[in-house]
Every structure is written in structure tokens, then in C-alpha cells.
Picture 1 (cartoon, rainbow, N blue to C red):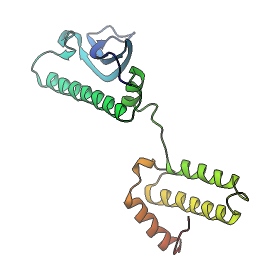
Picture 2: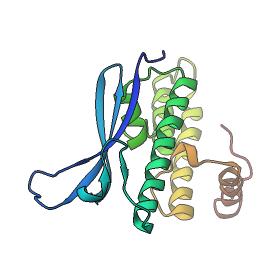
Picture 3: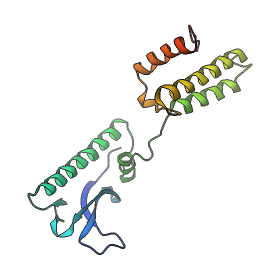
Length: 185
């Protein structure tokens, strides 16, 4: 669903305890009259800020770099908006903010999904699956955990990071270190 109104505004915001000329740079995203603010985690001098345009004043290198950063951030907002439209998600200030900050994005991981899968198989023993099938999945789950720890030095991997190289390396690892000739799934 497309929004009726959409706006972006970069501005400086003074922290509660700070009384200096330096202020934090924020972006206000307004969609259909609802506004959300995102900190750019950068500071800038109030005397060197053009409030109406939401940009740094001047031609010094630091001002040009900041303005380029703001332009990139603005482009990221529009890219996020396009991705949400493509995914047929509602465009709101909240969804844009969550998309830009990485919040609300489901963090799907291989071990988590594999564990959930095995729990579902276990519940269906005697109905759709034999116990031996569950044992094979359980063994493969353990091998997967071991491989991830050995290869990547971590307990789990995001699904988005899996690729052909992962599958190829896992297959080789199973054949060489676990003496497995075939894995039945």
C-alpha cells in the first residue's frame, strides 16, 4: 500500500546534558503525518548547519563529506522504500525506520531452523516419519553444528550467508572428517 504523504528532513538535535554548539544529526521520516527519528550518530556545529536545507554549510572538506554522507543516507531511505514496495509491505515511518536500523528484520539462522525442523519431525514419529528417519536428521544436525564451529568458529550462521561454497565445503568435510559417503535427508 502506497503512502499518501512522505517526507525526509535532516536536522540537528541538542542532547539533554550538552550545552555546546555541537549537536547530533538526525533524520526525521514522516509518512502520512506520522514521524520517526533516526540518529545518524554524527555531530555537527549548529553555526555550520543550514537548517532549511538540512545540510552542512560551506565548501570545506568536512562539510562536503558530511553532505555526501547525508546524500547516501537519503538514497538508502529511498532504496528501503522501494524494497518494501517490492515486498508488498505497508510503507510507514516505523517500517522504514526498522528497515534502516535492522530492527524487525527476522534473523533466521541455519541451526535455529534445523532445530525447529527436527522438533517437528520428532512430533510426527509414528504418523509421517519413522524413528530411524528422526535419528538421521538428528545426526545430520549434530554434524552441521560441528562443521559450523570448525569452519566458521561460531555457533550458527544466518541463512542469508549460505551459498554453494558452504554446501561444497560441508560435503567435503563430511566425506573427509566424518567418513560419510552419503547423507540422506
